[in-house]
Image (cartoon, rainbow, N blue to C red; front, top):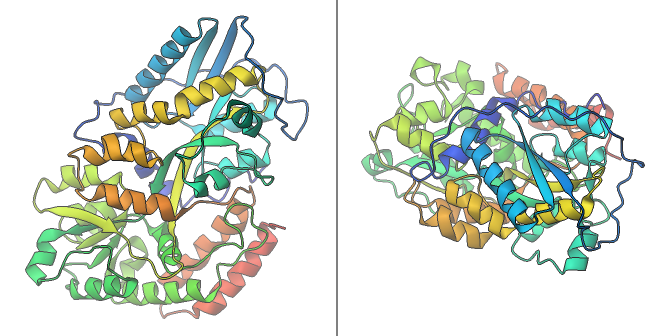
Length: 468
C-alpha cells in the first residue's frame, strides 16, 4: 500500500487549479464561497470488510428501521459546497424520514481516506477522483459494484458518455461509481486582440495541430510575446495525447506501458523544438527564454498579455477575466487533435463503500446526490462540470461567464477525454518515471534522442510499476 497514492508530486502543481473549478466555471453567477469547513472526525473503527473482493448483495427494498448514513466528499468549494451538501442531506431526510445523513467534507482527501479504507471505517458513500488516487482505491476494493442495484432498479445510464461508464467500471464490467464531473484539458484560450493585430483568423474546429504550431510561431516576438503557453508543465502529456499517443495498452486496465510509440516521440520532438525556439511559455523552457516578465508562465502570463494562447481547462476562465482586468478580449477553442488523438483530463464521481452496513440505503443516497437531478442542482450553483450533455446545455452553456465558446469546447472534451488507468501501479510506474525523464530531456543543453529516452523510460516503468 506504500505506493497507493505515490507519483503525483508534479500533478500537485495544478491540483489547486483543478480544485478552483467549482468557483471559476460560473464565476459570474455562482454564490460567493467562504472558508473551508473543518473536516468531520473519522468515527471509531467498527469492522473491516469481511472480504478483500467486494461483492454486491442482491438488491432489495431498503429496510425501514432508523438508519444513519455517512457521505465523504472532497471539499474543493469551501462553505458553498458544505452548505449545498447539508441541504441535500436534509432533503434526503425529508424523502426518507428514517434515514439521517451525516456529510463529511474532507479537504486533504488522500491522507484521510486511505487509513479509513484500511481500517474499514470509510463512509457509506465516498467520492473518487482520477487525479486523487481513485485507481488505488479501486485496487483496495473500496467500492461496491453497483451493477446489481442498477439492474434491479432499471436505472438509466444513457445520459452518461459510454467512455466514462466504461472507465469507472471494474475489470468485469461492473460499474463502481456514478460520474459527476469531467474536466478536459482541451481549452485553448486565445487573446483576440493579438490575433486581430496580426490579421490571423481565430482558432476553430477546422484547426489542425500544424495550424496551432504555425500560428504559435507567427505570434511569437522573441522575449516580448509568446505564441503558446502551458498552464502547468505536465501539460506536455496533453500535447502527447493530441498526437494520438497512448500511455498504455488499455486506458482503464492496462498490462503494459506504450508511451514510447511513434506518435509519442513525434509529439515530444515537436514540442521540444518549439520550446527551444522560445515559442512556448512554460517553466521547462526557462533557459530558452520561455518565461515572461517576472518569470511568469501559464495563466499569469496569459492574463498579463504576454501569451497569445494558453492551453488549460474550463476553470481557468474566471482567473483570466479577473486578472486581465478587461485589458483584452479572449475566448477559447478546442485544442486540435491529430487523427486518433485524444484529450487528457480528470473526472470524479461517487460510489458505495464496500464496507457499508447499509448498502441499499447508500445506493438510494448515491442516486439522489450523483444522478442527473443532483448534478443539475450542482450545476446551478457552479459546482462541477457535469459530463451529461443535457445538464451542460442548461446552467453551464447558458451562463454569461466566459469564455463564450465554452459549451462547444466542453462537449468536445467530454467526447474525447481519457483519464488515468485504474491501477495503483500508475504512480510509481508512470508518474515517478516519465516526469524526471521528460524534464531532463526538455532542459538538456541540446535536443535529446527522444526515441531512446522514451524507450529507456518505458523499460524503467515496467520494472518500477509492473502492470501485468
